[in-house]
Length: 424
Image (cartoon, rainbow, N blue to C red; front, side):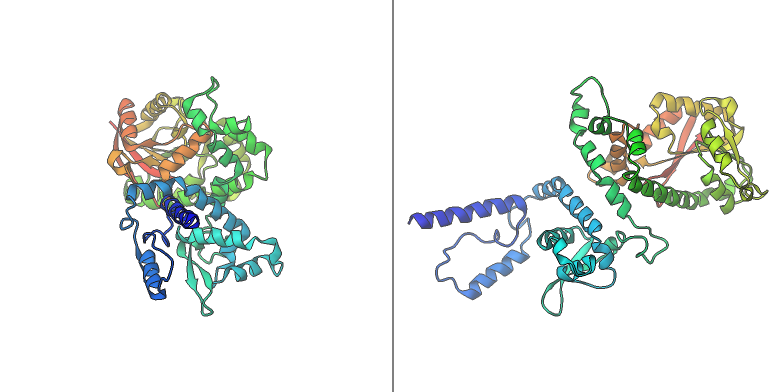
């Protein structure tokens, strides 16, 4: 009798745990005595278990959604593991069992891979959509790459020129330097000391820029992300500007904070605009000029690189359009208004300012919907950067500087949109 009590207690314990973890195989039927159970009855109950939904099991959708949210880092760390093991590259052509994957990864030295751990990570990744589990002709579990998973192959494996590998993004965001920074977010928000240092500084006792300057190896993925993002942004900006091409013809354009002039050179090559200037701080312009080749200065593609200060109107050439990409997001509202007022004076009558930052959605467009730009905004906060603004925030700042927000043009890049302000 005592043993029967222990057995029943164990079954209920398992049932309780499964409600918390999302298991679906045992929780669909109540406890029944295991004595004399018929095989066909047991099979029917398993079929019911596999076909049951969270709702039919009495689990609230809110509870399951919250579990998925809270366990998101389980999947992200499994994803990093699979990338570092080279799983996505060896799955490039066909479905493979976990043993076949390991064999291809280690070239015969399978003892270096923890088979059970890799299999369990891959099974979790099947729930995310980057790989699918199938049954092969030998009735063994096998894994197949999805379209999303192909974006995680190394650049040398990917066959598409249009899509670059997103593996550097995953590796950078899950690196220990950022992971440790996230752990400092609660204390930063609560303000448990007087320093008010951002999470990254708290985790590493130095700023983000100093850290990567002193850790060049760990900077590799960060630089890969920056280069890939910049290339995609310029292409997406040029595509979005096609709707304005007729109004840009022959116009004078100044790119504030334009670095080496990459955007202006790309713009001149894509449409018949007029004079183009790239304005940045003196040190940046000196470096840009020193790297400019003769081919950059022919009559058809010339961009004037000029030193200046966006708060000093006298250093900004008179123009019809002002572009500024990922500059104003680093400044407080008061400084942004000062900069916009300076732009206002430099622009001709009817001139426009095009702010190229990620523009966050407003209110109802934000609630309950995942948004990449909102996530990036919090990521910027880790290193103490100012961050992105919503349509409403840009509209309010524009009014204070004598502009009106005409429209926000979305681009194919999640890191940049075009907020077009008209001078009034």
